[in-house]
Amino acid sequence: MSHQSQVRANTLRGFGQFMAKRGIATDPLLQEAGIAADDLTDDGTDLPFNHVAQLMEAASRACGDPNFGLSFAKEYPVGGMGLLAFLVLNSRTVEDAMRTFVRFVPLIKTPFKYSFVDGFEGASICWRLVDEVSHGYKQIYLFGASLLILRLRQLAHPNWIPKLVELQVSPLHPTADVQNILGPNVVYNAPHYAVHVDQATLRREVPQATPELRTLLERYGERDLAGVFPTEEKLIATVRSTILEIMGHRRISLEAVARDMNCSARALQSRLAAIGASYEELLNEARKIRAEQLLKQPRGTMTDIALQLGFSELSAFTRAAQR
Image (cartoon, rainbow, N blue to C red; front, side, top):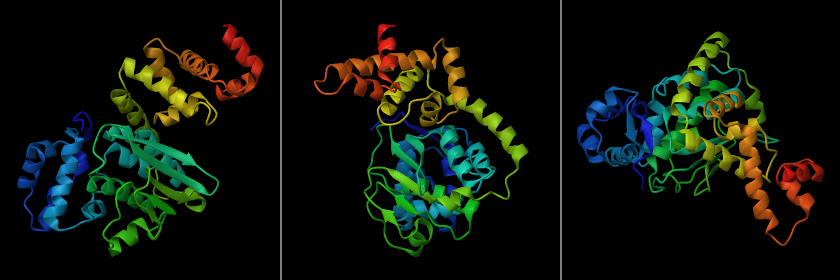
C-alpha cells in the first residue's frame, strides 16, 4: 500500500465535534491512525490517505456504527470541502454541478479518477481507485459516496434519491439512513463507484446559485488546479495514456482528453504549451504507438485500423503515416 496518496485535512472537518457528541475522545483514535491533532487545525494540510481511512475505521469501531462514513457525511459541514464545495453549490444546474465536481475534485486531492458519463436516460459520476491504496477500507469510501449524494440532493430536491448507486464495498448494515440516502437501488461489490442521476434532475436549475460569484470562484479554481497538476514528465505521460485509453472506444478530441483529466481544454493546452508540448504532437505519438500495435495483429483491414486511430477515412491515415 502506497503512502504517497494524500487528501486534504478538511476531509476531517468537524470530526472532533462529531465524536464529542457521541462521548468519544478523538486523541486515542488519531494516535492509532498516525495523525497528529495539530494536523487537523489547518485545512490545507495534506494527510496520508490511508491514515485518514484507518481513522474512520477506528471511529466506526469506537462508535459501534458499521455505517460510520454515511453518518459522518450527514453531519459534515456544507462548505467543508472549501472552494470545491462553493463551486458546486453555485452551479447553474445539477448537471453543471456534476461536471464542475469532476473538473475541480483534484483540488481536495484524492486517489480516485472521476469521470462524468453522459447517457440517454441521464448521467453519472463514476470513480475508481488509481493509486495503490487498499480496497479493504469501507468507511472513507462510504463517506465520499454519501457526501456526493447529499450535496446533489441539496441542489436538486430535499426528497431526491439517485437512480442507481454502485459501490465497490460489501453490503452495508441495513438502516433507515442507508435507505434514505443511498436509495433502494444499490449495487454492492461493483467494479467501480458511481452515482446515476435521471434526466429530469440533471435539468433542474439551482435557485441559490450566484453567477457572478461562480465566475470569480472558477478563476480561483483554475489557478489552484495549476498547482496540483502533474509534473512535466507525468503530464505528458498522462495525456498520452489518456489518448490511448479513449482511442478506439469514442471520438478523440482535445475536449474529451481534458474532460477525462478533470480540467478544461484551454487549461490543458496552456499547460502543455508551458512545457513546450502540444496536444497535436502527443496525439500523433499516441497514434503511432497504437498503429504499430495494430499492424502487428493478423486481423483487421487498413480501414479498420484508421477508424480505431480516430481518422475519418483511410486516406487521412495514409497521409499521416507518410509524414
